[in-house]
Image (cartoon, rainbow, N blue to C red; front, side, top):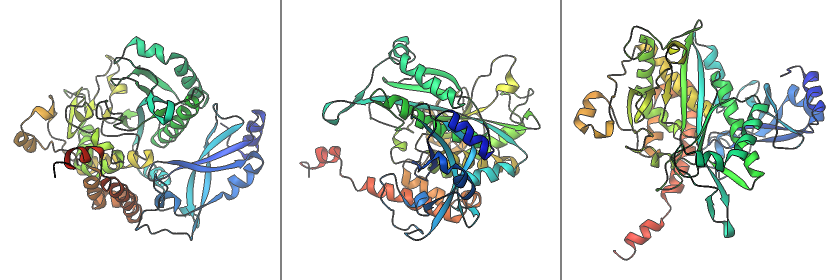
Length: 447
């Protein structure tokens, strides 16, 4: 992709682009932005665009301002487009997009995790590859606003493949045109649920491409009167949707997680990296499972993980070591993290995971013994001895752990941590104040 301003403008004009969307992801993981004409490209790249400073951390997913935010009506940030993220949008006529960083007085905005993630990656001797596996339901709105599944299928069934085949081809082609690779597709466990496994990329690039992945699904499915929902737990009767994250760690072109001398193929650094994530999982889960709904997915016996443990080929463990193809062990060895869903800001989630893993290496944190069974079936006393603790079971408990975490404050700064806590506490309070149909059914006449 061209990076020179003149080349970019010619590139866009040759493709009939008239509008550019400048996108950012706020702390509630809403994709927002501004739109500019292609004629303004030079000034947009040179001077940036302005935005109210409050928007990144002080606007919730309901567009209400949470109490306690340090930002108000005064103050602006400069949106600086990143030309390396330029794509022409196949689903939006004559339109391209770039992802922006937010700056204040020439410095990164203190609550924008994207430039903070970039700085973190530049300050370590390791490099990383990150691959996302988004799960989602394909839905449509029926009469009177009722939402229903577009189709139904059994897990991995060819029936499910065929139901969505034409749309799937459109989605994959739209992703290809934006430089986003897809490794695998399959109909998931939930009827109407699907999964596309994205190719692995360097962490910042992987997060950027996940943003475009979400936008592409919305755009392509919208042409058919459909939409994709990444909601972690759309129904008590349906399997949840996760955003499994595959991570590998590299040093001087060598997989730092791998050793051919270990029973499970892990190096010392591999064990320590796992140890760091597990040690801090109760803190980082506030940003990887970032909504009140997330914790209805993270239940024992749900294959989504519920305990801080690791295990080879174990889909109930927080960290799974996938089976590697024979002869490709070093290249393929990676960690699959199961405690992530699509309500998480990807820059914040990936950065927190990497920070915890690197601290594990620095402090040589032992991850404990592997979990070779379903941890939910292990007696609680034995789990405690092994250190396989239960995750926080709701958003409030999770953000309290995040708020008091020294590692998260060191990684993201006090302002971001405090603003994130206020934002999510606001979501919790809104949710917790709702009286549900279940409560009325059970309590109204009984008491």
